[in-house]
Amino acid sequence: MTWTDSHCHVSYDGVGVDAVARAHAAGVTRVVSVGTDVAKSAATIGDARLCRAAGFPVWATAGLHPHDATDGLDGLEALLDEPEVVAVGECGLDYYYEHSPREVQLEVFAAQVELARRHDLALVVHTRDAWEDTFAVLDATGVPDRTVIHCFSGGPDEARGCLDRGAALSFSGIVTFKNAEPVREAAALCPLDRLLVETDAPFLAPVPHRGATNEPAWVALVGERLASVRGVPTAVVEAATWANTERLFGLG
Image (cartoon, rainbow, N blue to C red; front, side, top):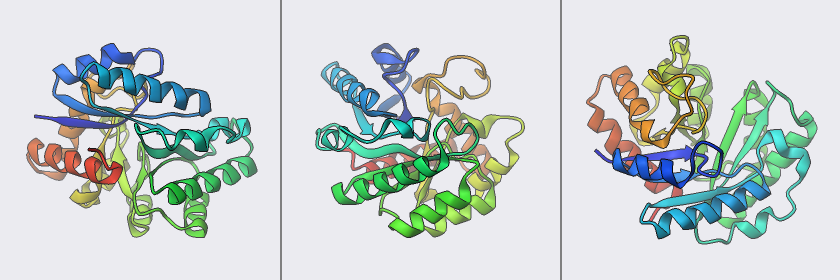
């Protein structure tokens, strides 16, 4: 099989080019590496180039995570013209930790939605304990045609709210966790053509590796659990998520 890890952090400690090589050997032959502030986004782009030079297809995103919203957006837009960049994000709202004030998060999120629209790029959304305001921002700014709710952690109601707005849902190792039944219910109702898989490496390693440093090579475990939840062969999820990631991120 061939898989795409639609969201990981190659430039974070514990991942890197070596992890991408291991993923490629395991059949994860495409990776989208995600930036979370201006400096990390620049590093993500550079590491994507290194991976591609080594023969591993890796694309980059550039964005400002809600944790870092107070850092500001200076320098971010210039990165969006780099050829490796396929999306703005991850960006959004996080009211669980609130490392940045809510009003700043809201402002910076809305600005990045506009950047995605202006540059005709996909939008990668992080939302945690902030569904109402996330939907409000998307409704006010207009949802970009290619919007991905990364690491989906809601239940059926939140899934329907995303899907009604035209977004795709990306599932991580959370779908394998014992206490994640609402997430599995959401995965069961998500249309196949709007389903993605990710690791969010180095975070959220799937069962049976929970607690370990996550790796892009383990994205198949997420796909296998999704297939089980949906009652379809794993190959169906593999093929659909490959095609969906290619379409949503414009991978060439």
